[in-house]
Image (cartoon, rainbow, N blue to C red):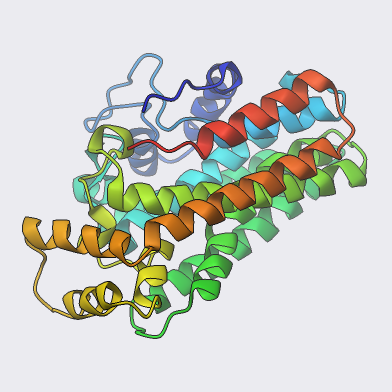
Length: 338
């Protein structure tokens, strides 16, 4: 299924792209090379890519909308929008290393090109750079920085839980949802509220949009977990069934393992094998997750979270066009693409 990207996402990329490129240019040469490659601003040799930018710019789009929700021009939200995107990419650089992923956005991951150490340092640099951008601006930059810092703390906690789950055989669906709420939804909630905070908008609006982002972010992660199993490479930028190959305890997998079904028990036995999966085993594991109800259950959860997000949005006071754009992005990021 082809899903059309909302116009606001492309305009967000155009608006925040130069700010991100200028920020990355401030890094030391060696770190800058890795960061620019990961962000799609340069090739592996460091040669600039005109108009290059990796990712969909979803979080910057949400941050710009957040500023507009408070009655400010989108341009006033560029700094927090760029900061959120830098933090998102800090997490991706580290996540690729922890998961052993060798491909992202249809190109080799940074750690496979430059080494683990260089990719870690580039991620650290992007995190520090994001905070610098906010703290350099007044009068509300410090409050926006605190919002972002709180989201990062939750993101790190979620990543820690994700790693811990790999060593456990008794993970519950509720634990997976809590982990996803930290790992993904916290930064999405921050993106949806940081613009309001940065321009000095009302706290009630920031809280409503944070709730919207938390529910939309959880729905997004649930859909992403499904894409990790059933997503086509041209959509995900990763090989088909990548999460199963890595034996990740994603929510559909845990739902299947805890289903009490024969398919769930066969899946547990298959995942317990220490040998790398063959293509046939990846296919079989995929069939078992679906047969155990993993896909159906997670689709229902994703739909429920999206409905909750839209409910938060409808109760918030903001211009109608801004509300419509928030809703369009939420529906875009949670659309099924396989």
